[in-house]
Amino acid sequence: MAPPSNSQCDTKILPPRLCVGQRLKHFQLETMIGEGGMGVVYRALDEQLCRPVAVKVLPPELTSDPERKQRFMQEARAAARISHPAIAQIYYVDEQEGTAFIVMELVDGKTVRDLIEAHELDLLGVIDIGIQAADGLAKAHELGIVHRDIKPANVMVTRDGHVKILDFGLAKLLPGDLKKSAGARPPTEQLAQSTLPGVVMGTAAYMSPEQVRGAAVDGRADIFSLGVLLYEMASGHSPFQRDSFVDSMHAVAYSEVAPLGNLQAPLPDELQRIVARCLRKEPDERYPNAQLLARDLRVLRRNTESGVALKTSWHLRMTDALDRLRQVSPAAYGRVGVILAAIGFVFYLSFARIGTAGIILLLGGGLYFYRLIRNRPQRMQAWFVRRMAKIPEVLVVAFQQGQFTVVVERPAAQLYRRINHHLASCNRKLFFGDPMTVSILHDLAAEKFQELLQGPGVQYVRHDVFRDQPQGRLR
Image 1: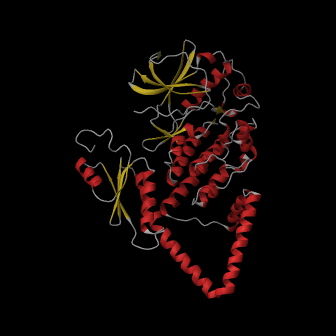
Image 2: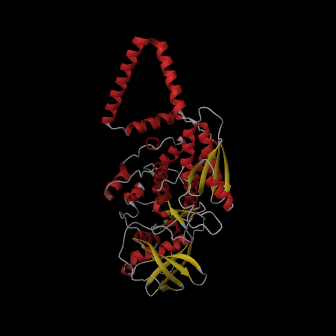
Image 3: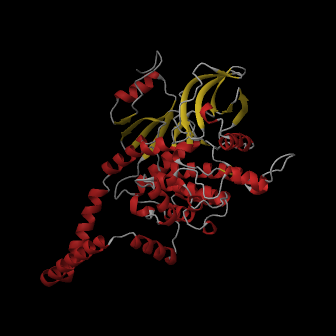
């Protein structure tokens, strides 16, 4: 099993005194895989159950800080109560010789940050990650737990396509969920010590406006952060990332984001509206809970897979147009004015010389040849192959006589839907000719696999196909 990506936190701390090979109870530390403001994470071996785990340790240099240590233990108590496929499971929490630690599920996969940087996400992948993350947050919010640090580095996708939310190190129990035990301080005092008024925690570009202001937060803060995550997955750009921590916080609190359609086109209007609702500055204007967000994302996925285009009302069209206009700089207005004046002048000369019939004929011919060139079958083939190359499970893509052959690493309904969705999109853009088809194969014998690679029409081969192949299979 490959070690997971460094994904627990971004802020560096002093090195821990624990050494690789040392034991905490019955867990042997094997290698350090991450570190952050709330602890250091090791890959370890559970010697009782003989399974790999992740162990998060509060560094000895910080154990003298009661507030930090209390917050660390609060993470374990909060996260251990959540049982959901989209949240990394907590197995064990304890303390040994003053060192507090949590044992959790070791997630084998890639962070969303890795997927964004490698350009491995397509539209359906973005929607699926959003749905699973929203489902996991909904479960946590039902228990009165707010994550408060949703970001690409804290969301992983396993090799099987399952989402795992990591690091409840900033998790906060809502006031009604704090139980007063014998000898304990009142809930308000516990909460005040956990999050002092005005204290900002989390990663600046993914915070909610209320976190930036140091105000009280609830589950809608996570919805805002998930909206930032959806925006970045869909566009490849973090909407509030700036050159400094302070500038990022100011952008979160006051700056409106550029509409998704300005950065990445074409995207469904419904996705843009979902993200825009998540990113409202006022919590009351966002989704009231994560279940409703997940529901809208599921409707979007169903319509996207079936090719249904949702109708957009004139009111929403005008609102989106005004949002885009607000993002246009004065210099851009000047350039547009010059271009429009030039076009008007050309039309004036054309009407004066060749008349209306000639203009219509010229425009019709130009549109025909433009679409003929832009949507020729070869261009659509290349478009489909590029989309397949972004799916990690695709091994080989070949094309011959109007049919694609796609060899995948594993059979999965979600994977088949994504491939067929891309093919349907490709066929809708064809200007002429018969629609293309696809044959999806998996678990080919070595001789069949080699025959496919040596045959005509191979368009794409995954970089590791020729590496680490067992004897008797293709090398």
